[in-house]
Image 1 (cartoon, helix red, strand yellow):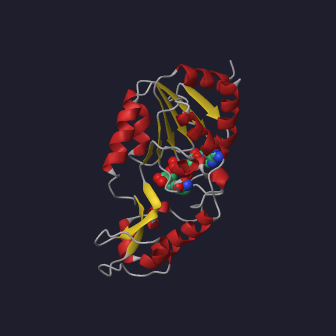
Image 2 (cartoon, rainbow, N blue to C red):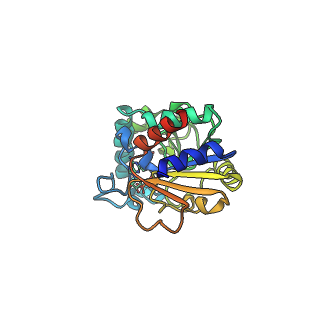
Image 3 (tube, rainbow, N blue to C red):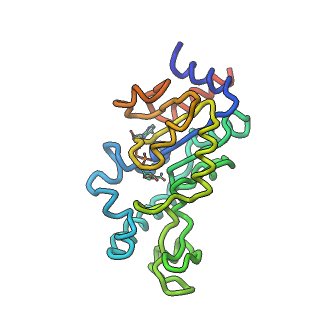
Length: 238
Ligand code: NAD
């Protein structure tokens, strides 16, 4: 049986399917990922900017980096693969989506049960007092209107703790799942890369680069997230 037919069958049979996505889910929306060949970070190590030290001690670099990302996101939107996942949630084929992405595309596409494990780039707040602020305030480099502190996007920086509620919900769903689809992630970022092994259900990897993961998954489908999700959807509807 073809791999995507197998996967479609598992989706139909499953009672509790959960999806875990990474930056590869959004590259076809025009949002670069971190680690593939044409990723954002080709010439720069993510750990040098996306951390609290850069925020505190190298705010200009930190600020410039995230402003460029926020600006770039304005021209991007969810693609057909995101909409397919939203449709699958409505049809009861998947229970929830846990994501490492900070772009907000799963919610924008219509998924309601979404765990944003690395927060949202759009939820700007003050690093000092936590007060909410606007994206424009951040990009204009305004200080916090409440306390004068530095503004930052509401993402989880390297070295920071993940949002507890999102983590607990994702972990519980994955532990109880009978099928977990891992889509578009290099599985290099801790602790999210530990989540797939928390399930006793079937484990599927959909990614452009799959080398080295053969032992870890029940099924590996190599290719683009957008195309594959659409192809699986066609089989599900046949
Ligand atoms: P990553 O860049 O480490 O890995 C992305 C993986 O997706 C790679 O293995 C790549 O081969 C694969 N890929 C790329 N395009 C694909 C496609 N169209 N279809 C299928 N696979 C594709 O990303 P990660 O594992 O998510 O870790 C990076 C971290 O960076 C995460 O913490 C995330 O929060 C953050 N990030 C988020 C965004 C976003 O919100 N869109 C973008 C870049 C980075």
